[in-house]
Image 1 (spheres, rainbow, N blue to C red):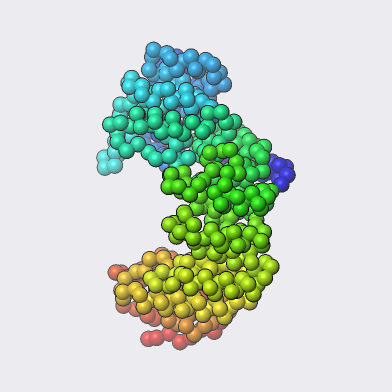
Image 2 (cartoon, rainbow, N blue to C red):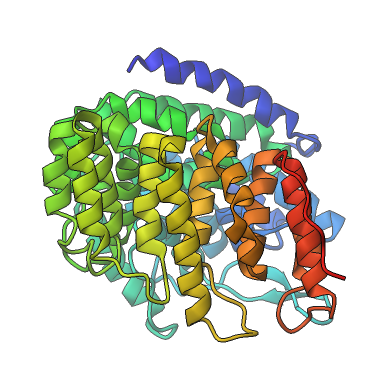
Length: 514
């Protein structure tokens, strides 16, 4: 994949961030840190470390505190370029100056500065207080904090990004964080980059206030450019790391299609090695094994994305290796075996559809319906993605058989939790196949559609609304009929909803009960 593809994407980011600016930069002159320490009255640690923690930003703050905070941010960014001076100020006898020097380092968003911040994890000297709004009286109260408290708040996002466990006790919080950071840093001390560093930097950049729109855009641009410059494997897996890390705005910048393009630049053999827990990069954030260490929790969403796009990213000959790993740890313990079987089916289908059918029929027996059809839904979604409406009869019969099984297993009058039939509908809707409307039409036209209960109909409404792009029936209207609050007119209402769906899918209406 050519880096120019990704660099073209960066051109979108600067106007996006600039458009978000609705507050001018602070008018006050920039102050050196010692002078700033005399002026500042509060250091709002949560809002500084991760600005998105305050929604709406600065809620409940006085205008004076907002102006002070914005001037502080501008002064810290101005001071952040002189790293050597900041390192010296970290040893200043004034705890407030140490706090501001540490904050200026943090605003650099450079993982190499972490050891400098970590040196202050145990600093118990009092520093600026921070303010917090109480839940009931909505009054701002000052809370004391130490230099170490601020350092701990700055280190924690990096540990969280790598899924290191948090401290277990407030009494030993500083000591625990020191030990955790030592373990975190042991595999990162000589590195130029880490996926967790990119994640924290992107979160920080996206959450900066409108008054810092220019800095936000520059940091996003720099982060994207740095990732683009990585070798193909690190580049693709780092983008995937960010994509699965619940950075909602970032997910809007990098689509699934663009991620697939990035992953296609990685040799299929390398992706297969990754799925088999073999190291394919030296980045510790992108290395997973079959143990139970917390970092391995990320392997599931990583592998799931690759498996769900197996026909684009892997080779037909990889099917047997994928199938052999379906019941290995951690797939089996995490209930992910069906995802691996489904990927093996789709890969076999590329070369030998008959063999793929044999695999699907044999493996589906290993996932009985019982109280949940999630695993079978994964396999049937794979069948849909691979062959579409050509498998209409098989898909319809499975859907209504699974729904009947779930209904018979659920006590009357209780709301069912999300089930495999809902998973299947959402997979069909999300597939964007050109024939997905034809399958939904066939499901509505089937006589068994008249037997769908409230929950099944709700899932159908939700997916249909997503296809239509506008509500056929609002989910707010649907929620009025849930168990515990349903009006006595539920049966005719459900019948009328079925007719609305029939009209949408171009089918004749049926009489509704009185």
